[in-house]
Length: 67
Image 1 (cartoon, rainbow, N blue to C red):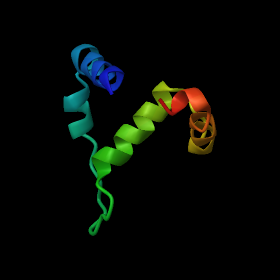
Image 2: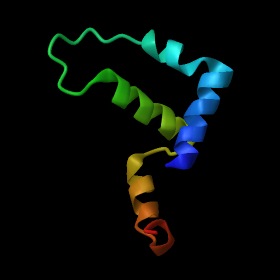
Image 3: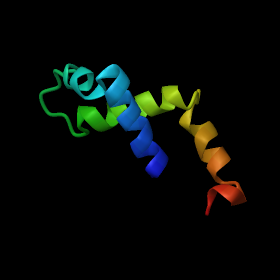
């Protein structure tokens, strides 16, 4: 969790991530899933260079990821 906080802090410091993320808008009238968590998930997927979340799930099944 600490590395995630550091990554988001770096994104804020270098790219003004918070203000850029606030500019992203959604026009769905009855959004069940908020836009920000979806956007952050996609951003982290791009940073981690994962083509699919299935690959990430497969990798996290390994024993050393469970600690």
